[in-house]
Length: 519
Image 1: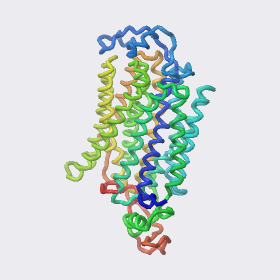
Image 2: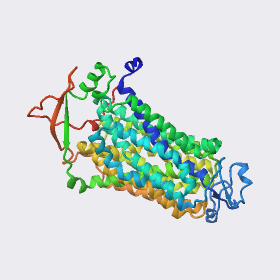
Image 3: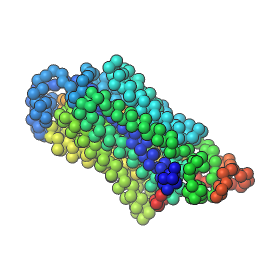
Image 4: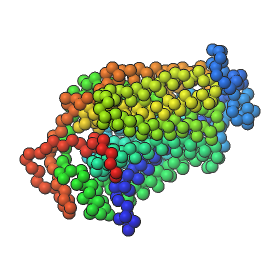
């Protein structure tokens, strides 16, 4: 245990929290690549050359395969990709149902997750959610061989389990992190979701193409086992609170607690539900979250299928190319937050204008790029340029409506984000269903063009409504905490003192995220 005393307990939590969200996203996103190898793809004689579209008639054609070996399969009715032993005759509608089913469960637990974490502690909620999702991942290959509805059932259960992880992690960050380092800790841990998406895209493509453990089944085995391994490490190394950690040093405990304030209030939030639900700014943020995630889930759930069924990339290339927009999005997200904070510190514009500018960059501009994607036709280079540009600028949208909730109602930011995430979850199942309805003949350019046009219109309209109705100004109901007790912490004290009669109003710990100092 000596090494544990050398490494601060809060740093171990940050590392394990980061790896936890990596697992959350590998388990969520991996099916998007795996399904490309799981399904037999109907082929038609490729009569369109690789290049830009020159006429409307070419919109009814398919692109030429980029792999010479696939050219020999051009006139075959049904083919499988990768080195998988088993593939399935799932049409676009079935694929859409399978891909979207995760979010039918996810949407039900995004709000209860935060409440349960506050009542029973976040550690086991986070760990249990990821463990259940990981174990269920091991069952997907078996379920797929039984029936596609068996896969749907498992994905719904995975969504229910994962829905609690993000709000519970947010709760745990507030318990473990000093005020002066919360901005950096939140950024590091949340970066795990972006890294997880990249790992899922690249790793799934390589595993499916390798033939290891039957090809695509290895994706679910490998990521499921990693999640289980993470769970046992999490159980041993991480605790709900610094006060409950048996190996934390007195010096570190005092540092954490003293930098959370000498008095730590237990706060009871009385949410002004009527005012919240009648607020135009709240509903504007929800609609913007819907448009933001519509773009987000195009990259996560449908881009791998587009690269293979339309642009005809092999699985290995698919995984690498699908990861590019996500990598750029993560980098531009960090860049956008720095620029936004810099503008705010210099008072270059009002906070509402600041949020609207970055929301427009992250939603409206990517929507315009999606509008141009069909014009690239079969040209892989220009398709990737447009999709990568959309993904990069999309990352800057994190400094838009999401940050506005903290600005407008710091005492109820968690509640507002939970409400907003309902709108943000809808694209997760709506997009695959829409694509299954639109794309009847796999790989036809016109049908995919309609899909991109619809996505573009949704992104542009939701961005414009935020410009008109969005706000980051502090709302009259945005500060409404009632203090019920106070816990005093000293160098060696762990018990609550009697609460004083006159208590200061204390803002919630989890929303003080703007100070950026070392951990």
